[in-house]
Image 1 (cartoon, rainbow, N blue to C red):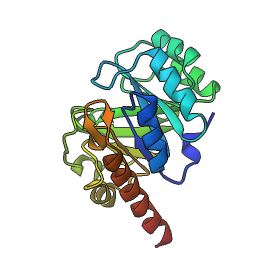
Image 2 (image 1 turned 135 degrees about the vertical axis):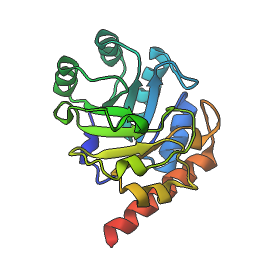
Image 3 (image 1 turned 45 degrees about the vertical axis):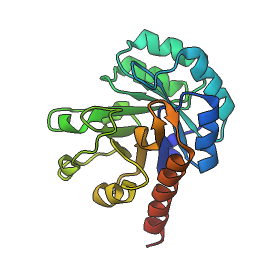
Length: 214
């Protein structure tokens, strides 16, 4: 297992639906890729998720994205799909968090930016936090102003309408530890575009490298 939180920063491409697209993401130099195991235009079944993650091996952090599944359903997926991290878009139970971490998995709690004012995440249960747009997976950009007055103890990943064209600006506004894009790296929902993937990964890495040298 690869510990996601050992990375100095994280560039993640989400919504990978095939081995071919996983190869594009790896070739672009992304640190992590996500397979969506939830209702979505990018949803993959367990068999395909297992094939993708087996192909990736230890060349990138393999993240399983879950929404609307109970703890037992998540356990069943983790039993057969080789993952390094789980990204949970529902409240994280103590029992599941403890079990996943004991199995060597990084736990990422995801939340929508418009819920920050009332969403109280127990950061002791998780290893990283992901703040997405109001409609995850929609590709819509949104305001980052709710993050101005919110401080987290865990590494922060930002998502929601990110692409090569805007990721540097979003990082300058948020100073997040990681970035995550799905629709901004696609030619159509669930299909990656090699140029869009590379543009996003390159732009994010350039920003992080500049910050690390200043």
